[in-house]
Image: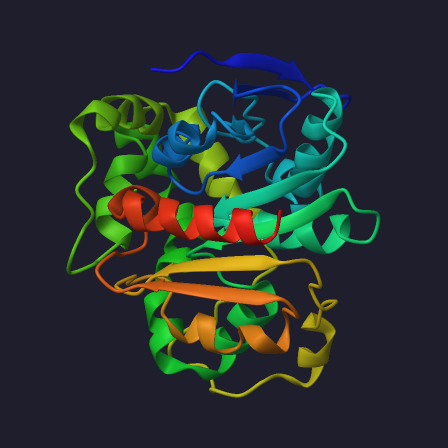
Length: 299
């Protein structure tokens, strides 16, 4: 396993960070998703860190990084702030943000907030929906709403006893009824299971869902946009953006890709047909090839 650096942010939050590659090279900041850690991006970092400075933290709540237990600590502003404060702590003036799953959700916002002053120059998103597109689908698209009911399970405190007694793995088995569950690399699974078994880690990870303002209606709720739907609109993303999507994703459906041209001005989409939700390690060669082409073209 790679060596991690401990970085303390001005807020007191501490993050374990895999920081590799030449310090004077262009910086790539990799954000993992739920329920993983910085190792989500192992194939990409090892492929790119001869040419780029690759920065992959265990985000707040994951691994041995700080995992406060209060739900409010995981408000989206705190999670976005962690990324910018981490870059500042590492003396990185500008960077490309790369995110998967929840890390991708944060990467969308980091890119939107960071594009104006040139702090974020490019964005790469892997199987993570744009917040506006996703929320519209949850209101109007029956298939995506059905696929997202697991989020309601993760938010339900009635499951807290199960987590305390059996860890996060038990809840994952209960909530994710995917037909094709991903097969974790045995060399990675041990560390993940160790982290899932710790109740403090488990609740911290779930707090990403519990603090989120995304609305997941029940299956019985009407399939219409509410009157306040216009409040969900966000600024157009102007910087070059690559979206990589494993098309067999059972949680975040391909419909999330269809609405992107309306919210991203400079968009490249790479659809990977034979991969599911965890595309960075399910199809690493295809993801690496897409990254190489995008990073070279937008250098």
